[in-house]
Image (cartoon, rainbow, N blue to C red; front, side, top):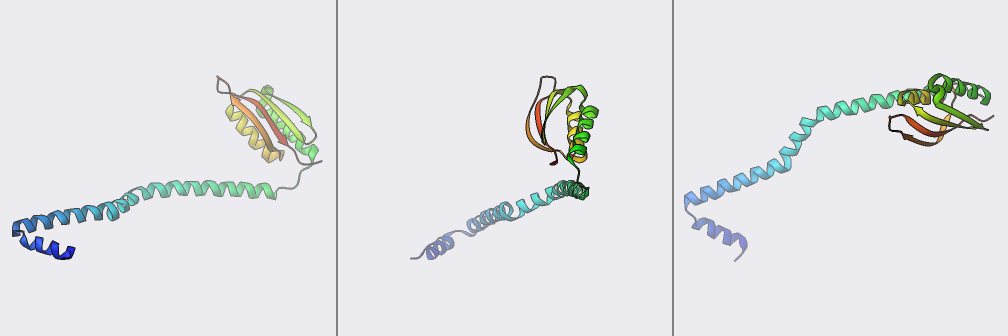
Length: 160
């Protein structure tokens, strides 16, 4: 006897009330499976979709701003070594003041920081990249107990 025939014989042996209870139990199990597999995840995705879309839109806007900044940097005219060095020294004096010392060795400039404020460092790095076309090569920075930056940065200037 096959499994199907055994189940059919057993089903027919049940009273109508028992058949109804088994049918309801099977319906509940099927409904739970449909919810867990198909509807639940879909509704969860729908609930989080708007927040996720906003986050992705913000990331896209940020990436486009970075793209425009990169294109603007690429379109700037080439800058010589002497001009880049003057711009870098001026930006160090303006943004970092006495918290930075520089050592110039050819196209490499080592900037030693001692108690530099995070905002000043971030603004100076941007200014050094844009105005002096200085590219960071190495960085050994750490925050001291006061939350200020200390360490060294090695920048590369355009070739002579």
